[in-house]
Length: 70
Image 1: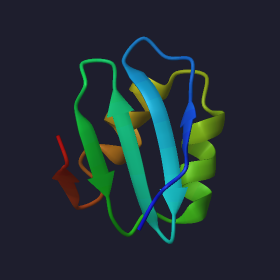
Image 2: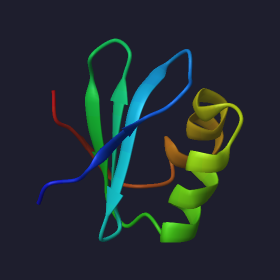
Image 3: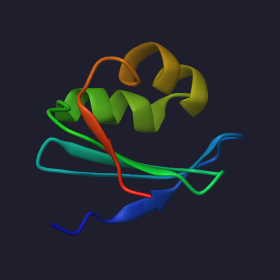
Image 4: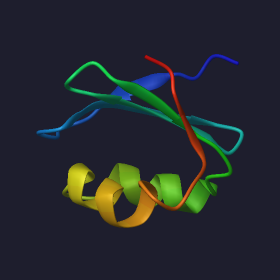
């Protein structure tokens, strides 16, 4: 499944993408993570947040199963 990625303004995150309850995040350090079972509303909140890093740490990081892709 290919997810269209969008660049974001953040000090720690460079790109985010979402498709079928799967969210991908590319960090500025080059690491890519895939998060499963993410509701669309949660992704929309994340995309609209003023601090992507803070939102990630508080509402994504330990809330959804994930796989490190690279």
